[in-house]
Image (tube, rainbow, N blue to C red; front, side, top):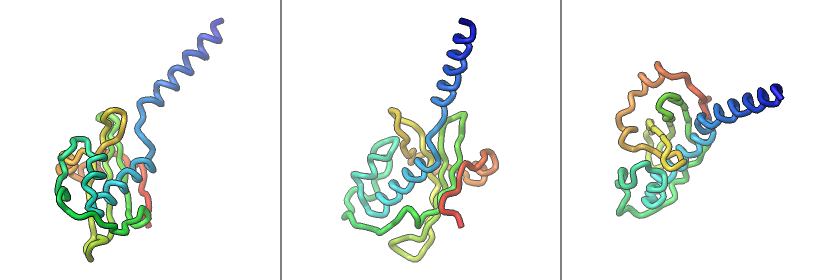
Length: 144
C-alpha cells in the first residue's frame, strides 16, 4: 500500500512539474517565423492572430498583402526563457526579403488563453544584452 502511494505521489510530481514548463524551442521559433512571415507579407489579419494585444501592431492595416518569400530556414533564432515570468525572448536575424538590409528583431512571447502570443509592446522595450546576460540560451536555430 505504501509503495503504491509513493509511486502515485512521484508520478503526480513529475506530471505537475511538466505542466509548468514552456513550449519547446522549435515551437517558439516556428511561432516567431509565422509572425515575421505575416509581417513581411503585409498580412494584417494574420498578424492579429499572433498578438497578445490585438491591434498593438497596425502598420499594415491598409497595406496590400504580398508573398515576401521569407522562409523558416532564412532566419536565425536565438531563444531565451524566463522561467519566473514565463516569457520567451527570441532574437531573430535575417536578410530583408524586401530589401538589402539585415533585419534584427527582438520578440517577447507570453501566454494568453493557453496560447503563446507576441507581446508587441514589451518587445519594443527588450534590452537584448541584459536578456543574454541574465538567462541561459535555450537554443540557437539556423545558427551557422
